[in-house]
Length: 267
Image (cartoon, rainbow, N blue to C red):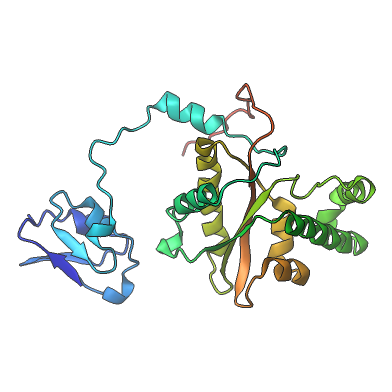
């Protein structure tokens, strides 16, 4: 139920910003027309200039006032975003559970389709399990190579290298892996995980950490490969939605690299 205090000025901002368009201004202030359509995003509470609203599905006391918090200037923000690198060389120093939880605490605030959220995470910290996950993913790739699956054939040499040298071409020797999972019936699961793990990647450098998308393992998980799911302990009703490696970078990058020229079509 939406609670309206005497501070409400009936400005209507809450209704304008409601993504579902279900808030209207009545005689006594804002009211929700269709409770069952509410996605619990909290926009109405967060935007109110008078702190006059409270809502049991997005409580005011769970929201953090922004106040005069500084906003990054464009140059600082640009350099921060451009300096992110995909890390494939890691120190073997383990990351504390506290720092791993800090990454995931930020990840849960990433945008999700219709505020569906719905993600949960498996964090791998055991070296032996990391090695087993690499082996399972390689076996999956080898099966596809034997079946001559077109999309995987360009990577046949990579798994051959693993068999010959035992160099970890899947998880790159990272000490940890974060796997996002979502209910199988959630159509936005993988999209939600993309945003969530992107937050992990962007926040990681502030903790001295590096990350890299675990692309091969991710695709193996998407396929429902039984051995991988069993190793991760994924429940029957859940599916792998994304995966990133995490650890302390072994090297420091000294420059921001260039990318292809921007291509824009204006209409």
